[in-house]
Image (tube, rainbow, N blue to C red; front, side, top):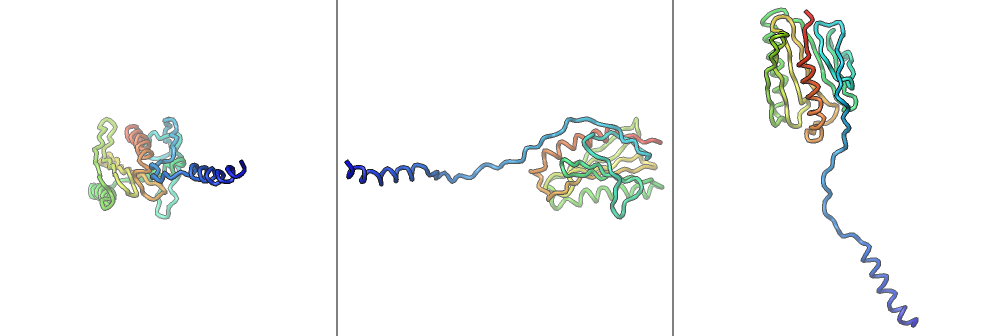
Amino acid sequence: MKLKQLICLPFVLLLFITACQNHDYSPKPKAYYRIVFPKKDYTAFTKPVPFTFKYPTYAVVEQDQSRDAQKNWYNLHFKQFNGFLHLTYYDVSGKGEYDGMVEDARKLAFKHTIKASAIDQKLINYPDHKVYGIYYAIEGNTASSVQFFLTDSTKHYFRGALYFNERPQYDSIEPVVKFIKKDIDTLISTFRWKN
C-alpha cells in the first residue's frame, strides 16, 4: 500500500500544480475612472461689473490673479474636474477695436487647428438682450475644448475659454466637457449687460 501511495503522490502533486495555473493572457478592456457629477444648480454672478449671468453652484468664482489680468477678469474654477473657465471683459471704444477683438477670438480658437479633429462654430444671437457672439466647440486633444465671445456690438466685449489642468486627452475628459458645456450654455443664455 505504501508503494502505491509513493508512486501516486507525485502524480497528484503534479495535477494540483498544473490545475491551479491560469494561462489566460488576454488583454483587459480599457476602463475609465467613475465620475460622479454634481446636481445641476445655478446662482447669479452679482459682482460690481457691467454684466451678469448664472453659473453652477459647484464652481467657484475667483478673481484672475495672472500677471496680465485686468479689473473685470474672473475664473470659474471647477475644482472637482480640475478645470477653469477663464472669463475676460473689455470696454470697447470703437469699431476698429471691436473688429480686432473679434478677429483675436477667431485666431485663438483656430490656433488649436493643429491638434483639433474638428472646430464647430455656432452663432449666439439674443437680440432682446443685445447679446451676440460666436461659440467655438473644439474637439480633439487640444488645450481648450470650448471658447466663446459675447458682445453688444458697440461698447462691451466678453470672452470665455475652458481649460483643464491636465494633459489633453479628449477621450478621457469628454464626459466632463459635455457636462460643463451645459453650464456654459446656461451662462450664455442667462448673460445680460447691466447698462
